[in-house]
Image 1 (cartoon, rainbow, N blue to C red):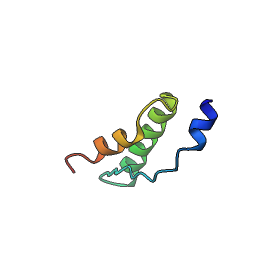
Image 2: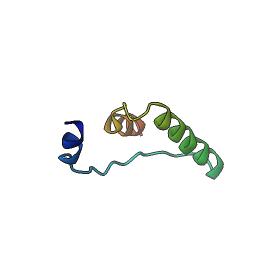
Image 3: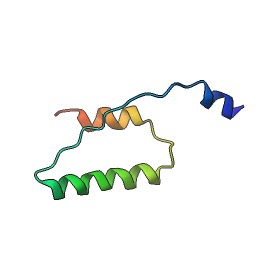
Image 4: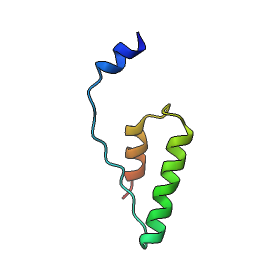
Length: 57
């Protein structure tokens, strides 16, 4: 049943806004997001992560 639910969900494009003072800090931030998102195992709402990353910018 879980597979049927996943099949009916259309893909959504999300934007994760990140910035840094230079390429090194930008890369570090991107790597931290990758580590965090891999660590939560897909149980986080990606739209909330993207919204929070962009709030106040």
